[in-house]
Length: 236
Image (cartoon, rainbow, N blue to C red; front, top):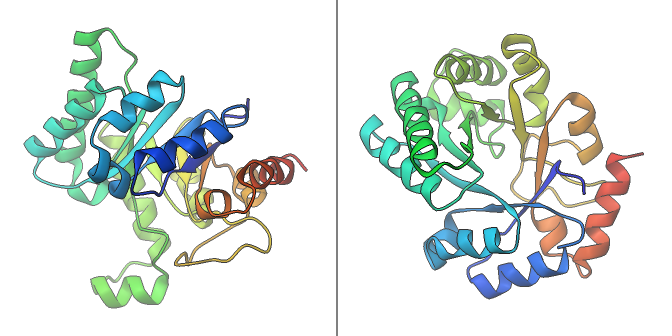
């Protein structure tokens, strides 16, 4: 089974999400649980996915004072999330505390430590939006590179970033740094609210370790065939 694609379960109900999981069970091992689904269902959705022998990317983008984020990451680790993200813009101390929390809970429960990723700049932003909204003198790609270096310094495993910034992240953070890329759209798929995108094959070829795909799979008439098509595209 190819572990590179992560299917985003962007639903409001657990039943809807688990139907997709069941449909794709023979193809997909990783699923992403975001704010909508987690807010609706609570930790039970993570437990259901783990019981189905699936890996869970808990995409809640924690961003708060260090102690609060550390506690949240501890809870996320304890419920069995395999990968957790936090906003890198929360600062190095916040990221260090989060990393320590994940390590401590993993050691105490004798479970594997989840991958901890820093969110850089959302893929819904382009250069003009970034500079307008944040009055930043940096280019968007420079900001992504800066936050990636901060995440590495804090001990995080990697980052979440647009596929367009993979090259500069690899240059700054090395080959072992884990890069997960949303903003991935198959050929001919609608971009939706994504601005900085590549196709699945382009993202993997650029050096992404994993890609996140949601609507092109979950809103497809035939989600199974849509997933198979993405796998075929990656392996062309």
